[in-house]
Length: 118
Image 1 (cartoon, rainbow, N blue to C red):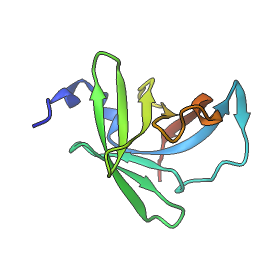
Image 2: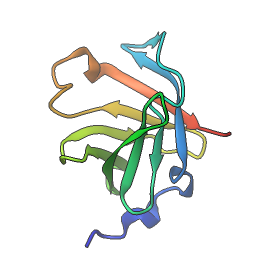
Image 3: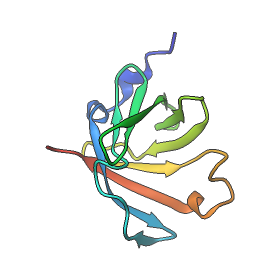
């Protein structure tokens, strides 16, 4: 049973987020895929959805580290693939993480998300 640290999370996390912009080494990244591609949706049960362009999605799990104030996202196979930092009502920051990005330029990427409103 997971500890119920979800109560410390901002209520706003539990919605669908779309990519606003990305930064790499202090420069804005252009040409990123538009919503619904890369949309993230966080569920209260510890799952998250990562959307594709055609509205299909992959699922994964997330865990909140209350001392770091960071949400860790993992693929279904349990491999860490990202960290959500800077949780605010109107924005979250996704930092790519895990073995696949260590030592690559992706380590310096930051993706900024805003709520997706229909």
